[in-house]
Image (tube, rainbow, N blue to C red):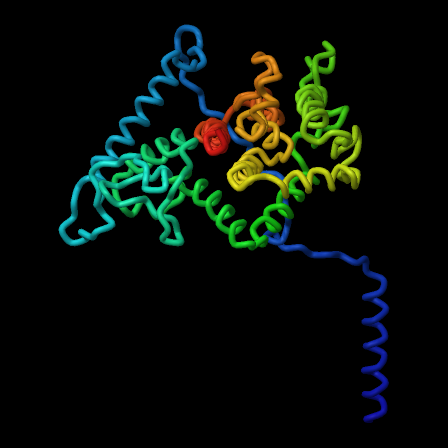
Length: 370
C-alpha cells in the first residue's frame, strides 16, 4: 500500500514538471513598477496677455552715470566720516580720537626734516623719530598731509591709511641696516626681486595665435595681444640695455607657442643682480614698491631711472618728449587686462579700483626717490 502511494506521488510530480516546461514563460510587471521617460499628460500652454504697441527699448547707460557714481561715493564717505565723529560713551578710548590738532614739517637740530604732530615727531616702529634729508621736502609734506587726513589714532596703526609713512619707514630701515653692517634685508630683497625677473610681466607675451581673439582682429589684420605687448616692451628693454644694463640680452619669457618660461642668460642675471645690490636705500625701497605693484622688475627699474635723483645727469641728456611716466608704466604692466576689458567689459569697483591703486603705488615710489 505504501509503495503504491509513493509511486503515485512520483508520477504526479513528473506530470507537473512536464506541464510547466511545456507552458510559455510570462513575466508579470505590476503597474507601479513600470518606468516612463515622458509625462503621462502633455503640457498645455497658457495664453499670454497681448500688449498693444512695439516692444520696449533696451536700457541704456546714462550720460551722467560716472558723475552720479562719484557723487554717491562722496556721500557715502561723508556719512562714514560723520559716523566716526560720533562719540560713544561706553567705548571712548584714546584710540577713538586724535590726540593732535595740527601737523607741520620742521627742521631739527641736525638739519633733517621731521613731521610733527603738534610738537611730537612721528616715530618709526623702532621708536626713532622719522627724519628725512632736506632734499625730501616734497615727501615730508606728503607724509604730513597723510597724517593730517587721519580721523582717529587707531587709523595710524593700519598701513593702508599711511602708505607713504610705511614706505619711508622701509627705506629708513634699509639705510639703518646698511649703516650697522647688516646685509640680511638687502639679500632678501635681492632674492625676491630676481624671482620677479624670471616671470616678468613685461616679458610674458601671449601666444602668437589666440583662438579667443575677436574675429575682427583676425580678419582685418589688426594688432594681436602679443604684438601690442611686444611693441610696449621693446622700447623699455632697449633703453635699459643701453643705459642701465649695457651689454646684456633680455629675452621674452614665453615663446610664440610655449607655456614653459625661458631663463634669462646668466650674464643678464649677474648684471641685474649687481645693479640691485648697488642701489641706495631709498631707491631700493622704491624699486620694491614698484615691482610689487607692476609685477615687473623692468618696468619698475625704468620708472626708477626716470625720476630718481641718482640718474639726474642721464635724464638731462634725453629730450623731454621721451619722458617715461606713471601712465606709460601702468599701461605697459596691464596690457593684458586692458585687452580683456576692451573685449569683455569692465567690472565696476574692481578693474577701476585696481587701475587707480596701481597709479597710486607708482606715484608713492616716485615721490620717495624724487
